[in-house]
Image (cartoon, rainbow, N blue to C red; front, top):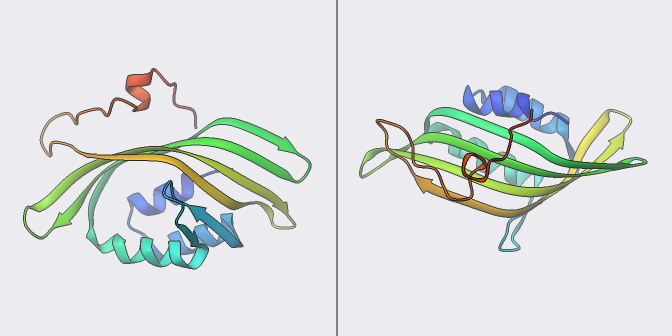
Length: 152
């Protein structure tokens, strides 16, 4: 289970490669559930990401860590944390630097093509502004504040 390619594609704003890599790791019936209960299928996630990509000015950091993994037969469940620091276009301010941190439970299935992500349940996601110049503020739940060791 590697998110490294997806993260690299997003950081490089490589839309074509992101689409290929996203299809490579997600089942055709993949569902992502937000904390508010809203669900998106694979095509909706892909469209939303590709639509937002032109607004990304830069990505300085993007990580996905598997905190806990359980494999039983052809099913795997994982607790993951994810974080990112990025700058977006902002109509009023010109640029807006943001940081995001969250947790999700994932379900992966073994397929003839290898392990694929079938479902993602985002448990929580926090986003906050950071300074464009200087060190960003850390969210109270960030891995750095919680002394969580990053594992790739």
